[in-house]
Each structure stands twice: as C-alpha cells, then as structure tokens.
Length: 510
Image 1 (spheres, rainbow, N blue to C red):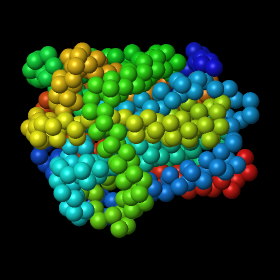
Image 2: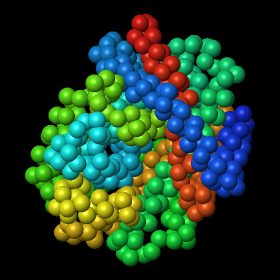
Image 3: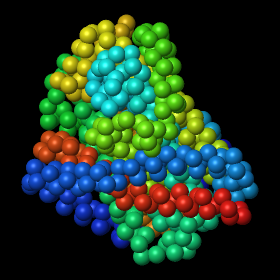
Image 4: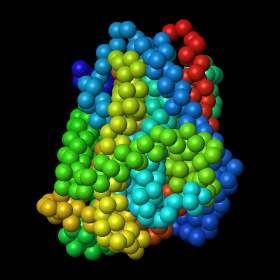
C-alpha cells in the first residue's frame, strides 16, 4: 500500500518566488522589530490580540462547534462514501501509518507537554463564575472536562474539515497545492486568482511563527527535563545545542520524504505514546485516574454544547479568552497549512475513512491520554498538598511531568525515555509541516511530484530554528507565540468559507 509516487527529476518543482520571498521578508522584519524594541513589539501585538479576542472570540468557538456538526452530517451522507482521488485511486499509506501520521502531525507535542501542566491551572484556579471550590472534587472534574474540550474533538475537527476539503480539491478536482484550493468547492475557478499567493503568504507566516513558538516550548521541555533528571543547568548554550539538534533532525527527516522519515518517525512515536501511557496507568494512581477520568468525561459530554457556544456556561470572559479561545485561535492558525499535508494522506480512501483517521480515532486516543496524564497530575498535586502546582508556578510547566516521573518506580529510566519522546515528538510534527510549507513555496507540486526541492526544506527548517533561538535567548517567546494567535484571525474566515464549501459539496453530484 505504501507506493508513494516518485518525483520525476526532469520536471521537479521549483521555487515559487511570490510566496517564498514575501514570507521570508515579513518574518525577518518581524524578528528584527522584536529584537530592536521587544517591549514595544509585545505591547503592539498584545493590543491587537486583545481586540480580536474581545470582538471575535465568540466566532472562534461557534465556528469550531459548527464544523463538528458539518462533519457529522458528512459522515452519514452519500458524500461519506466518495473515494478521494476517484474510484481507481490507490492508497499511499496503510491505515496504521495514516493514523500515526495524523496523530503526530497535529497535537501530539501539545498533549505530551500540556497534558500534566494545564489541568493544574484549572484545578487550582477554576473560573469564578462556576462557583467551584478550589482543589475540590468538582474542580478536578472540571479540569479533566476542560482538557477534553481543548485537546480532543474540537481541535481535530478544525484540522479535519480543512484537510478533507483540500483532499477533495487536490485529488478529485485536480486543484494546485495551495491555500486557494481550499476555497474551490465554494468559489470554483475563482479560487485560483490573484489573492491565492496572498493567502499562502499569510498562512505560511502564521505557521512559521507558530512552529518557532512550539519549538521554543519543546526546547524548554527538554532543558527542564535535563535539569530535573540529570542536573544539567539550563543555559543559552544548552538551549542552542538542543535547538540545533532538533532542527538538524527534522530537516533530515523532512528531506527524506513522507514514506521514509515522516512515516517511520510517526510509527515509532505513536508506539512510544502507547507504552508510556500504559506504564503511567499501571504505576500511577490507577483508581483515581479511572474515577476522575470518568467523571470528567461525563462533565465534558453534558456541558459540551454550552461550553462550545458559551450559552449558559457561566464561564468568565477573561478565563474563556485566555484559555479556550486562545487554544482555538491557535488551531485555526495552524490548520490551513496542516490541511495541505493531511489532505495528501487520504488518497485512495473514502471521505468517511478520512473522518475516522483524522478525527475519531485520534480523539479517542487523546481522551485516554488525558484521563491518564491529567488525572495523574491532579492526584500527585493532591497528595503533595499543592506541591506540584508550586513547582508549576515557580519553575515552569516543563518541570511538572519529570517531577511526577521521578516519584515513580524506575522513574529515572521513564524520564530519560520521555526526554527522547519529547525530542522525537516535535521532530515528527515539524517535518510534516515543513514538507507542506516547502511545497507551498514551490511551483509544480502535484500528486506525481509531491515533494519540494531539498534546499527549500533546509531553508525553512533553519529559519524556524533560528527564530526560536533568537526569541528564547534575546527577546523571549511571548511575542512570537502571540503572532501565531494573530495568524488564527484571518485563518478563521478562510476556514469558515471552507466549511461553507463542504456544505455545498453535500448538495453537489460527485
């Protein structure tokens, strides 16, 4: 099944100057501004971010909720039986490899880093509007429910709807490898006009910013683990070494293409996720995990509608914007470019298969992950009388997970293996995004020639690593993370149009 089309050397893709150079110039100007006047930079970006959250926060939550409704209708419709690529199309990946890549490309790095840190915030500081007592069983239930809301069906729904529409546009309607193709079901041939390069630049800029911020988070996590487990103090030199190692690894992986580097890394990464989850479930507070996980899941399902639309949810607007809308905006920023990569994977399978492997199966895995990891974090915080939350607030999120692992049997071995997993998890997510970014920056990308020139992949990989290192050592990561959220604002409107286009396909004869 893994018969990836090979690139023809004579007709290999070339650089798309209209996309590559404007994005590069805007990124250089942004970083230069942030270094020259970091306080002014962060203040400006923060004001823009606050304005977006104040006036459009509701649109992020409502549209994400409606996307799930649309996908549910598509799943059981005649469109769900349509084969991506046509009746004669053959899959390029087995179902297991497809699942592994879909999981690792989207939120795998996040669940590893935030799965234990985020619930501690909700447990120790739940929204005042809910009237929940801090550190109570109700607070634990709310913390688990919130983890399901932020990391399962809603974010995957955003990725799935964009990836599915691109898959149909790219394979069934023979549209080019660009953001404009996402709008083909709605706009037809008008989707490939003068605005297409602008959309590509905009989404590429947001993704590079987001990947740099994510790389910074990954570097912090590894540095925190090295300090906690091996007593290696964090320094600018250590940050540089970690960042350089990650960048070199994901460039090599991205250069090797979908079948080799990306597929192999995803395969082993998901297996490691399963093993780590089973180990923690067996060695950790198993009874508490089951009890709190079940109550959190019930709370998530019973309040899903109200908390998705904020109708009768009693959630404070500040809390909602700082957490839920912040996350959703992040997913929107990444989704258009991630869709171009995810859409490539679905050829030879049906629309219903696409929803299964990009939404349902990854979400079921993530639910189990949050039950085990978030539940364990809450149990350890309770047993330490708030000691874990103190470590979170004083030493940072990157130290929470390794502090817990140190207390388990064979804790040092588990911590070292987890360090490797954090490293490989970011590499796995990054190489797939670099593959899509590089293809967007190239002309001549099609199913027969799916890979961009190697030097373009190397440039993007190096640029992301450089931005992350500069921001971490000189200017801080806050500004570049906010840029990713700002990128979610235009992406929001693009993906809303994508959703309307998918509804239109429901009434279009295949």
